[in-house]
Image 1: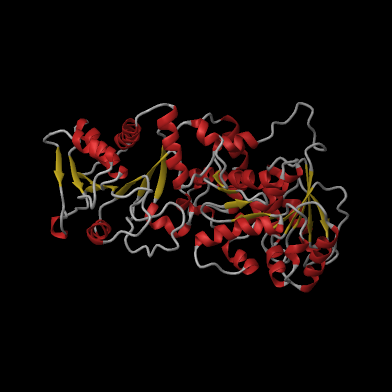
Image 2: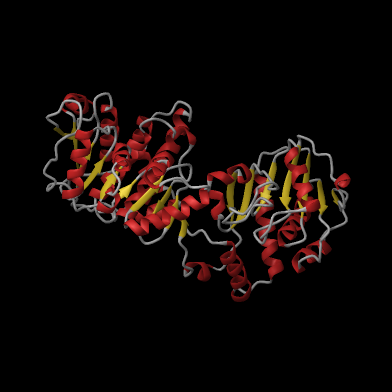
Length: 506
């Protein structure tokens, strides 16, 4: 699904108003109704609801929400920020709609001493600034944001936390941004929500549909996307009646070294679970019995060296090749890696020590087969490509590097980013902190290698593999919890992840 810029969202609003058609005030009412329904469904029991509303359309959303909640019998304290110039037309209209009810108290803070005392049992709803903000808050509003942040009450932000810009915050000092525990955003998440440096402000985000016209968004080009269950279902191949192991691809994994045979076991297990018809693992000679015992479904090619990978097998039988989990970085292994780069023409899946070897040997990026898939975590990305001053710069550079080297780059993290050589970036929406455990990356390598063998285009194999990997982690967390999760739990839930994609209608 698409991630639109704030400018594109404004255009989508305007298109909907013109072509549905629907008055802008009614579109705002839709947004407020969606917010109210969401809040009413939550098991929250707050002493007071305090809504802070600005003078733009975000404030109009807050005023409409205050009216709807008070109509439901909720006691609401509404604080209206006096406009520097004038209310937006829809904010002014919602101001005039506010009823005179005992359970709706309207306040106009003009100075810091007018700010209310906020208690821990209160819910704060932030409707001060929306996506139209282009400069940092100053004056009384900056003081108000600080007052909100200094309280111990939870904050729910409408559309975007006030003070945060929708995309690029590199010029933002971040001195005055609301820190929300949850953000309810309209129709599309903002790119800023996916960046680690903004998590402290955004918290958990949820999308509230407001019925923007699909004709506009359907044809709108965008480089930014996030992977949904519907996307995964659309990409997933359906096996034919006469499919057999020979038609479902033969994967080769090169993994393991002395003390790291487990990396080969995990990658091979995930590759088999991905649906690869055949899986072969090239391993150090001493690891052969370990892998054949732990993963009897896999075939092995033992290296003549008992401790490391040194030899290049005949690549002719294989439809995909994944290299890196636990292979080490000594000179013998680099010599084998160098030969792979010289001889292999199919896209590679490279992870872990394969990336570390590349970082130690400059120039290897230019030797990669087109559409090869690299899966660095932030530390490996830094070693390969250098450091970045912030997360926004890094994701822009991720996109540019994929185009320049004609590769697929997977930057692993809370919202793993998959950048393709076409300039598109897909951010993932599955996964959880329990997956921050040794071996989880080996599982991803095996999974993507298996998808490639089955005939998926590299960029689709990367996006789908990342989504399935995260979903398997989410299902594992439901069973064992995040703290106790191990990489093998992710492998064991890959099958359930496939079932969820195939069968879940939501």
